Image (cartoon, rainbow, N blue to C red):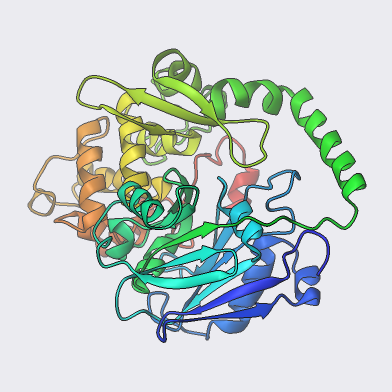
Length: 440
């Protein structure tokens, strides 16, 4: 196969512990273009109707696209496709970083996991050498420790996609985290990974990517880069302030969902904005593979009760642990983001589920005998405590781990769950941009 695709996929039978290689169908790749389209078509064809999302008949697909690993725009992206335990529909959770490029360099377009391993395992891919390895010693560990340990066991330059305790506990909003900080966050793909006893996938590739017409592609990529550099958002706003540049802008338009969507304006937006981050906790910028924008933020809080360092928070994470829960403490938002990365939790669904729980409590629908504590908007310590409880399904966290739809429905007030098809809304209030209502 010529032009962007490696032309080969891996099929991993976790039940039998075997790996097989298949050619990528040229017509399929042409007709269902891109990682999401191709993997969704495979999922539609191969996952049986009515399959339990957390059962062995479900499949988990890591997919790249024809631009992955090239200098083309968004060449860092890959998609994780499966049947979602949160919605019951097809999940297509996207992530950046360097894993997509590494998988292409190893010679594979997709990895399809099927069945369920009898014991915890991780997949190690080193070009044409592929094997399942025991992961019992990693079970129970966070994403960051898992990532470091696997690279010690394989190769320091390997790119690792892993689940944390939330995925192992099959929390319906668990995500897959690659390279410690990039996340295929939405729809509970990490829970599916956990249901298969698959702790991680690590990839090291030393090959290249074939381009049909290298000269024309290089010219087109260069022209695109010039446009990106010349645009005020991608050339100035995002490099300077990251995706958090949106906080004040969205708030000014009445679109920043606050206190479980009770309003679209957060009075303390400035405190959790990109400008506030740049002037206080920002350490440096960081880019995904082949990206000139470098909108990623590396932050550090060196003192106080919210100490921590790592990548993020991005705009959506700020929304989830800031305005959505009524919290104006940027350092607490950053720590909440770090905890979700390590535990393997989707920040959007986690934050909105906590926000839903707080509103249910304040309205008297969630009794204190269940929460064992007072719930109120604007309490960052409560949020941090609930994140851990959700990840480990401890106490009230076991109920919240099912997501806001199931939480609110169980308590008789599904109208307080801000969801579409059982999945929590992202950081845009449609009352400020009505077209979003149709999208949701």
